[in-house]
Image (cartoon, rainbow, N blue to C red; front, side, top):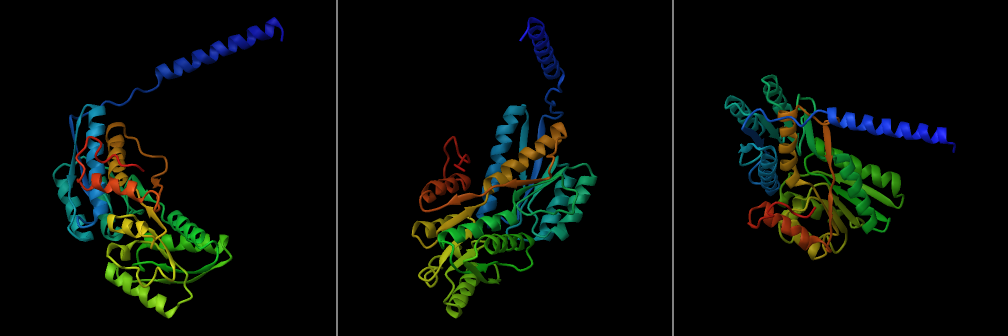
Length: 342
């Protein structure tokens, strides 16, 4: 390379560095909070479900962490019905709006009922984010939660893995009208039917979403169809009670979505091969983070659907994962409470 060329490249390099430095120097500085205190309403589906207690812990941890970084106080206003009740959620939203809340995060029990309340809040200048269960036709600016179709696909692949690619699978699916569960069912079907020709899907079985009804459905179906060698549970309803699989696990392998404390015992004793844990703590943490970004910097994710991955729980890591619940449910008061291993 000649001297002239070297000089040219050197000059271009210098210009490039100067341009980069200029761009960095002139880029917008982080937005400064306009208030000293921010209040974020958190409306989960029910206080009786531990996944939402975990979400509350995540939200409160985020409030402390982000508040310290931003130099502000962030308060989480928890407004959640004891049991699932979409109308009570809508009433809580109206109450929060009336108190001058800054933002709201809600897990929608019924999107049809809550869409109007979400839109009304947004029209009044209050940003709304949904988590766990979306209201996709509303004016919410973002949703954080499980990609249900992808979740079903992963569940189907785990089922195929533990069956070594051969067998007859039944899908336990809860409420037939729940769109998130239907998405998971479609995902299970898609993965198995396209990728595993040695596996047949017997059928999809619906039931009331209680542990007792789920157990009864599984036992009834298994007795009538002894050829079933695998159960794919798109929700872990039967695993919330003891001895649920005593009439199942001797004949069939079981994999399930969710990893609540009672469910972990089934993995430890070998009656369930795999649990796919949802990011329940992050439901709250990320909702507060998204809300504060919107409030302070008017930033929203480019894709309003923020997908949370799943944590694979097996016998090898069940004890370690269980420690998260001690933190999320307030049994662990150590300095790292809430910061469970993912």
